[in-house]
Image (cartoon, rainbow, N blue to C red; front, side, top):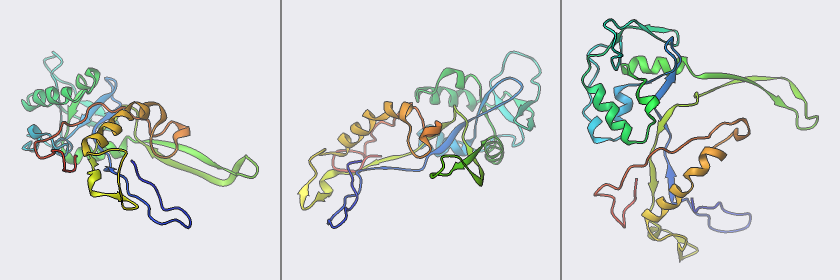
Amino acid sequence: MFGFAKGIGASGGFAGLAAFSDMHVLIFPVASQLGPQWITCPMALRQTGIAEFSELGDLPEQQVVYRKADGTAAQPPLNLGWLLLPVKTDWQQLGEIAQKIEVLGIPGYIISRLGVVSDKLFTHIVNSNLEVRTSVAIDPVTGAAEEGALFTYEAMPRGTVLFGELTCRNPKHFKINQDDVKAVDSPEKVRDVVNGANSYLEHLGIGGMGSRGMGRLRVLATKELADADKPGKEVS
């Protein structure tokens, strides 16, 4: 954001003022006999940086899925893809987790189908339920499929909830050809510009393979400024 590359025969070049971290999976949708379920784990919740999740410990039992009780006396096992797990409803912290992530703007239909598994199981569930798509390279000369160029790639299913970090650098720490940056004058204004572009990501997407519908995302919520993130400092 607000950066540019060094041109041919030109001097300079300017790094962007907004830096985006890698995105991490927070809640992952999985097919089951009860319809889609959204699964998370303690490690993913702790990594969000939300204070209430920082002390979240391991689950009481590692080989089960914790869900909200649905009113039936006996909870039948639940399949998450190919994995069949016993269901438990007695983990008290599940309700607190649901309330906290609701504040982040996560839709109610996800929260009502939320399940929590151990960190180890979460890794297997995500890796086993990615979408595998098959495609073929196109010969740019003929416009037809290129022989021997069939390939597959993995994609996260629609409805995956991701989280990441945005670092907004202070423009006063940078110069362009010895001149001050004029587009914005504070980290907060850098973040305002980024937030103003959020609505475009849902329709135009971000990253590669946009013509195939990849990279489209909806920004649900952004973290408010912490006390340490005051004007003159970089904002995350």
